[in-house]
Length: 377
Image (cartoon, rainbow, N blue to C red; front, side, top):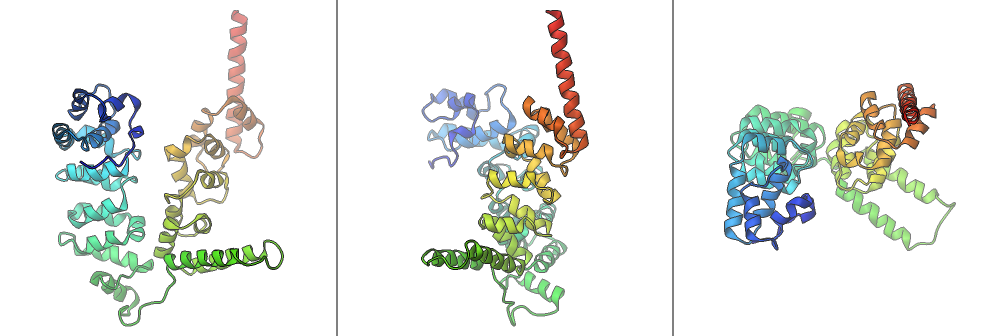
């Protein structure tokens, strides 16, 4: 039996005794049968995933059988959570393969990996294929998804044509995929197989950029301090701007901090979103975006809608001060700040007027409550 790819810490501590291989078989079997009381749907399916790797065949088989027979309300609640691990979503895609509503939720979940979506696209129904086609960022970010849709005989021609036309317009042309070649002819009126368009790719740009940095590291400094570095950044910016949308998205997903900084300012929403959702994105970068008054609204919405980022106090505090964040969202976060920060907000003229007024009202209410308590004593 293969080892579970996730650490035990993914589960809440009370569930460790039901998943740990060192625990008694009776406790693990209880978990495999979903007999653990008061457990959230998200944690239950994750527990079953852990137990599917158990060395005891009875426990392994029971966990798989339980997962396959989950009631709609259980898997529905779990699959709607962006906190569900990608590995668990991929496993559930097989367990719930006969339940189209479950597969729909898996395809709509941001935590689902592109690899899982590509695998599901191979045998997707017409309805599920249309859902896959509508996730334009995934199409441009991961070519195997488009390949899978084109190779699925069940998918409507209109769905494939729509996906291919979109991809071609945004710089993706795979010469070994006939549907994409035909789309290129429809969109541009030329056959791309005759003379392939020469265009710098994300992989080439990163390779050349790192090679330049390595070469310069072995040379003595030249010219005024900072001039050389500024020129490199300028050259990279110019080269990125010449890329197609498809290549920009690949670069945003796989590139370094400098590439993401450039691409987060791109006018195309898909490119910005690819950069902010990159697995290489750091809390420091997110904090800078949270402080920015010029950041793309969709990027900002992704940040304040992501639980892991809101858990970082500095990011939450910066979002409260940002006038581009909707007031209901800012106020909700403001009331979770420490008193000293709310006091600062009440005096800060650079924050939205409503935030400042509500901070003052909160402090006044707190002072009045304290005064009442003192009078009672």
